[in-house]
Image (cartoon, rainbow, N blue to C red; front, side, top):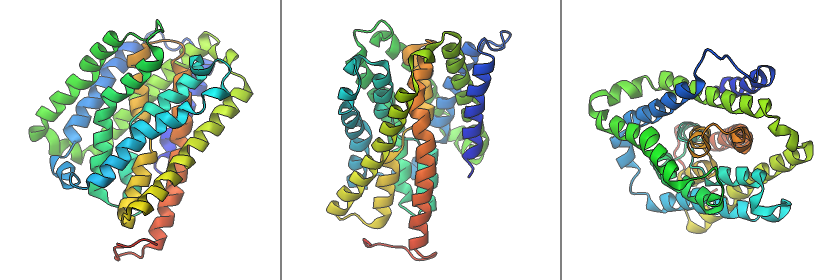
Length: 324
């Protein structure tokens, strides 16, 4: 239930963007969000616990499975949706869906849900953290394959922005971790609130530009329904593929929970950041955010149900080590 406030804030930001598409002119939203992105990854570096990261390092089977699912299976599944769009891979709506498929897993909700379901926590922390780090490079590379001919994508510029807004703050955070790491982890909730506030501002900024340029006039109800159906199908197909693969690999139930929960998640934080870095302040940013916002709400609601199901099947105080 703790995520409902964030979802409500995102929906409210979209409503305000629709009512006030020009926004408060006295606020330099571009500068605020650019600086906010830097701080998000600075705090990410500070909070990354070396001890917890090291603890989950050796469970290599789950790591390989989760990362291949996140960065290979997802994009390949989205590629299978190309025939459903009139202009194929050139469709902005399909590119928005592919952007979702290319994103890394989310850290906080993956760890929270795995904890709720009594899965393998160290492995979840390692995978979610590793996915976030790999996504800094892999997501722009995937997008570059289909957008190299587009004027809105210049790989050199994207790399430069990534280095300045993401990699540099992350490295500084990692360097200062020995001094401020414990403080950052103790105040993780407050830092999380800051992160979410920046994301809400990015969503507002993106949708206000979209509404002011009538971007959504080109997207009909049928397109939105199709997008919602594909996002839903994507989640459940990946979830049940992971379940079958985990059983074939003979993984214990704690690892199965971790693989399914981390492997199906996609990060709204990274999505919001990458939209601004790859596409700048383009009016089409809101379109690229649509699939990840739909997916974010879906993954929280569905995984919460599955987590409670796993939790109820494992009596408190008893550690399950066998398949059910």
